[in-house]
Image (cartoon, rainbow, N blue to C red):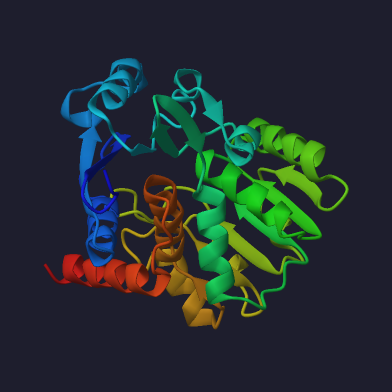
Length: 291
């Protein structure tokens, strides 16, 4: 049956995902390309479950003929043993955010790093990567760290309140990219930012449900570019502070769209229209802000 004729089933498994804009983005892009696609939210918070719910959910998706699934917190690592194969990127990061089902075979991918890179290079194509500071060594931070190293940044400093987690990620990156990027780790963001050319913020701080600024705003300076991954709200307290100082900034929406572009191609085998998907995302954000 032709792709245009059959209805593609895809979905998102995670906790607290009711406000996700991914379903609307994926369904609208599919419709624009003449495809029939239904995107289902599978919210673990609705049933009070955690990652232990994954085995039956993945099995059910295989049985029901899903084309694929997006995977988010707290399942990005837990899903790996349930899959048949991993892409090189997912294997290197030890996390999966996209699963593709083909002929009964489940393959895990990760579009976090590539999604961030797509948005970052689109917004700041001439950004100075001489010394990049990454705040947050969790799942998203790890993926972005790999992307920064693949961009051949000369130096990367990983900052996390959990010093051991920051050190573990730095050691992993050094093994993969030590010949290209000097990687360090610390729990002291002030020390890390000395001489830095850019800051990537990859923690939940700044989200609607966790408001605030993830660092002392006095540490920012006009020459520093700032990249944010939070997009609820799109204009976080960090970005407001950075803009007020004259910093060049990249909002979290660029990564959200970049991730969705990668997932759409994995699910459908087609390239999404990046400008169209980005415009739709920003209309959705504006509608939510004005609701």
